[in-house]
Length: 195
Image (cartoon, rainbow, N blue to C red; front, side):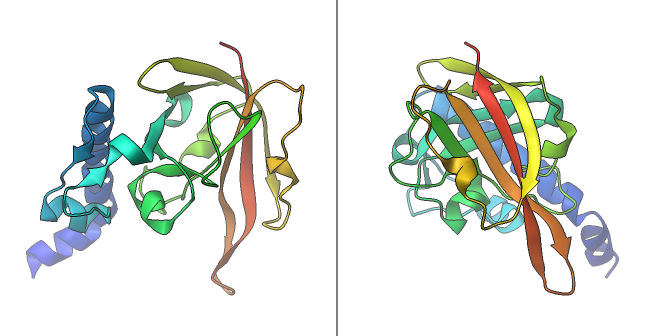
């Protein structure tokens, strides 16, 4: 009974610890050129990560790593289409056709209440902060130019504008309404390529 109470009390800290450990393994395996990462049953249970029999497929499914040091974010980025499974395992491009050579690269991620994982601390970032997008071949550096909220139906933030500089558009939920059980806004972080 006491162990259960301690687990419940520290659940978010435990989940954050395990998620950080799994992210470190995924990122290291990705950078080492591995194709799959197998999680043990405890890691799967605590993090909610999903995997196939061979493990989490990072060779085909992972596009890179997103790092925002000022917001303590270091997350695997999965290729689209966006699925709940990919959001449990990291953050993701929205559509299957999204790629790093687009003018406006959309990346969505959950904010996990009470745990410092995914985009939970993204509001700690500020305009002018740096975002690194790390692939197996290069690191692209972006600078945050805007942070603002939109209604979920406002999808113009995803528009491609030929001739404009390349940018990342990070998207996460904002303003939870306990009466409707819905997030009523989306937090948008725009960052322009600098190197």
